Amino acid sequence: MVTQPNDWSALTWLGPPIDARALFGPELDALLGLLRGLGPAEWARIAVPGWTVHDVTAHVLGDCAARLGRRDPGAPAPGETLEAFIHRANQEWVDRHRDMDPASLVEALEEAGSELARRFAHADLDAPSLGVSWAGVDPAPMWLDCAREFTEYWTHRQQIRHAAGLGTDPEPGALSVVLDTFMRALPHTLRDTEAPGGTQVEVTVTGPGGGVWTVTAEAGGWSLGERPQGRPASAVQPDAKGRPACAVQLDAETAWRLCTRGIEPDTALARARVQGDRRLAEAVCRIVSIVY
Image (cartoon, rainbow, N blue to C red):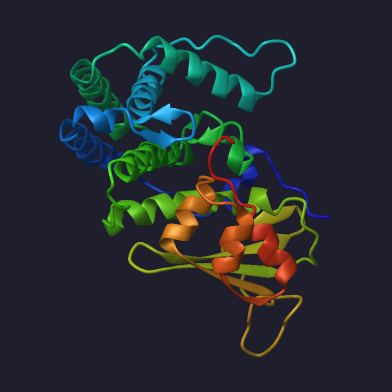
C-alpha cells in the first residue's frame, strides 16, 4: 500500500512549481468581457446544477472577497466536513446576492478581481499558503494555492460560456496551466492504489494546451517528481523501452471536465485510450481537482 507524505520537506512529489501569477489579469478581463456581452435571459440560464449564470458570477465575487479578507464564511459546524462547510458557505453567499443586478455585480467583480490580481502578482511562490485538499497537502506552497485559484476562475468562466451557448475557450496558454495544475491531484488520487515501488503511470492530454505527466510509486507514496537517474522506468514493465505500467490518453475537453466533475469517471474512461494495466487507468480516472 502506498501512503502519501504530507511534511513540508517532502513536497517534491507535487512536481515542479507552476507560476500562474501573471494570468489573473487577463483571465479577469476575459470574464468581464463575457459577462458584459450577456443578455438578460442569459443571466438566468443554468450554468451548473442548481446555479444560474448570475449565481456563478456571484460565487466568483465571493471567492475574490474571501481571498481579500472581505468575507468571513465562519467556521464548520460541529461534525461538518470541510467539503460540506465550503458548499454551505458558498450557497449562503450566493443566496445573499441573488437580488444584485448584473451591472452592479460586474462592477463589484471588476474592483475585487483587479485588487486580487495585483496581490497575486507579488505573491511569494515558495511561502506556505492555504491547503489544497484535492492534492492532499495542507498547508500548500503558494505556487499551488495560486494556481489552484486561477483554475477556479477559468473553470467558472467556461461554465458561463457553455450556458451562453459558447464552447470552451481554446486559448492554449491558460488551458495548459489549468491542466498542469489539475494533474497535481494525481499522487493524492492514487494514494490508496497498491503498486510496487517504481511503477509508473503516464497521463497524456492531447491537443493545444495538453501535456504529459508521469506519476511514480515511491516508498512513501506516489510522486510527480522527476525519477532519479538509474531507476527502472517501471517495476511492472521493466522492458528496454522503459514503457510505463499504464498509459492513459485523454483529449483536453474530457480531461478538464473530468477533473471538475463535469463528466463522470466512467465516461472519461470510455473516451480514453488506455495501454497497460487497466486497474491503474480506472484509478487515474477517479481524479478530482476541485472541492467535491
